[in-house]
Image (tube, rainbow, N blue to C red; front, side):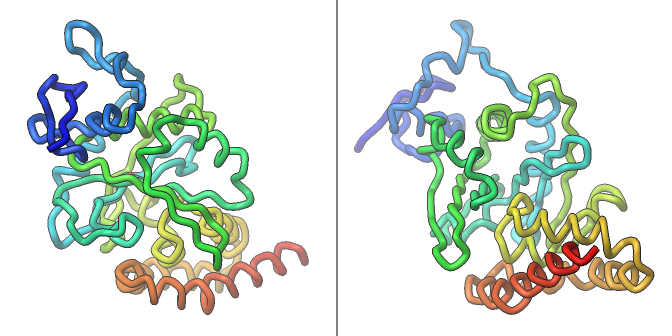
Length: 276
């Protein structure tokens, strides 16, 4: 059986997904010949940058997970969501497996035509080889997903690196984190609950998807300025999570939702914006 020396604890690990001794995902670095010798200092301390507070928030995510919920952590800067870390069981379709541990963390990163620059930056990262890649020809998006297991340290490190090197966020930035149950829509604050585009997020597979961002922008800049729009948004916040829960569990329902709901909505929103 193949084994590698775990960069985290030094043990000879045979589980090449996460070290069976300390849970570290860094065993995957050695397995794929990704540079890992500088991850830790000589005295065994982690030797790389992580945004302050991110480890604690992902640890909180893990502690809240059960078989009946889908915990989501949003990473924000100036009210813009740059990353969404979810319970891995919510990413079963992208991970191509039903053998998901609880608790565990995952991140899904989509790239479309509007994110070509970010896509090239991501592909230049050695760590991009750790992600599973799929391409949806119907929608025209590259999707990358990774299951971190319960290693919130490794997850925090990789997410921080992607935020800096792909999304261009200054390491000195003060990020905000919000952790909630996606299925129930119960954010940690009233505003976090009302920031979610539940159905679009479930359909496209992630909050950072450009289609989700476009619909969110239309909601904030147009619908919330109309009395009928405010009533619709309020109705959506009450019922959207229930519908999204069904969609998120079925690839068939995701495609139906995209072609008969999200796609028409995008066409309408673009026409409305042009007419303004």
